[in-house]
Image 1: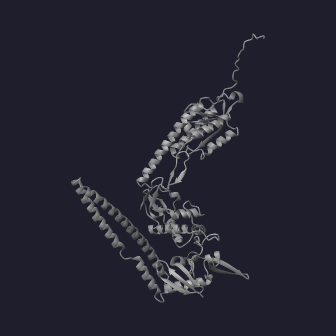
Image 2: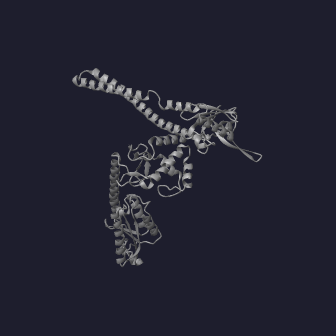
Length: 545
């Protein structure tokens, strides 16, 4: 077979252009160059830095004969660890995708992104489109072969720095919390302003709005009703807006700062990259500071609102025919929705509208009877609303007019409930017992030091400590009961004052009066109701006709 005598040769074909930005002009003329700059805070010093960066890049790009300015993109006062909130950065990337930018200049990797993953993903995406990024501080051009390794290395350092800085800031905040330093957000805090001494001071006009919200809630109004009332009256929120929301009312009702206290570390930031804020449900310690600043709402009123809110929340859903009889959900629209109950089965009554021959009639009916017929409740009558109102009004006026001594009976009941015997004395006796046990404990410890070999002393100490622990539990319970009694005393005093203010009686039925004075109205039969007053064992039967 004949073999070729020709030798194999290799010819080098030189590259027409480099993969490095800057040489791109050989094919495309002048490059469209953009700059990205960012500062991390809103301080005056950083804002000056932001302005200086814009001026620097504008001059640099315009002075280069191979470059033309494609825009200066600058995020001011926005954290650099997450790209989601950086509007200008995202606008620049969109311009790149649309082919409007060939090259990006930026000061450093930490200015561009402190998250390694985000940085690499963005750089790779731009590189795939032939768009380079020049990081001046690190001297990296992303279109070079070694750029990815260097970016990974330097971005890792930048992210570690961000995490360290975030950790230090959080540590400082938590140490401040531990020391009881409270940060007040005055712009969103109705009723308070920063005083001349830097401490919170009450704004009287706004404080009255806060008191109104608490008062109306305890009178039985829902948050939605309060919201509508404030909006209709043209009252401004803390931010000056005259349109209230359910959430604003709820936040005011649940904010312990209105009672003069402060709960710190309600939320925490999970990590410095996502910046996700999570409600603190026990992951970190919290700090409760009492009497931190002047209170707008007395603490007992604040506690009453929290108890009432918990009571309303605990109300179960409205009956369904597929389920068992249940309590109805809370309704603030009508006072009797909460108070009118069936004397036979104990279920609440529900307001219904009957229409016959074009005439509408309002009646109240047992929910169990409505849902299940006579299965659970056999004899509950339907009650006409106008007759119910008349009967309840009669009972209220009987009490306040004291025509038959009922007011004196109610007042005596209030006094008995307000001043229960033995609560204070019992607490004092328990504290004396604890002091005696502590003295015994100290004596046993002295004996143990003098005679280390006596094992019986250890057993005695163990028994004594168990007794002290049990006694302390009883003391804590007694203190809690005493505190509850103080709150009850305040409620009764308010109730008694309300009675005195209406000695001339009530001219007409009023839902608010019913909410303040009546705890329950029981339908005994079609012609009789039984009215139980709040904070009292007093019940009065009244005919309905």
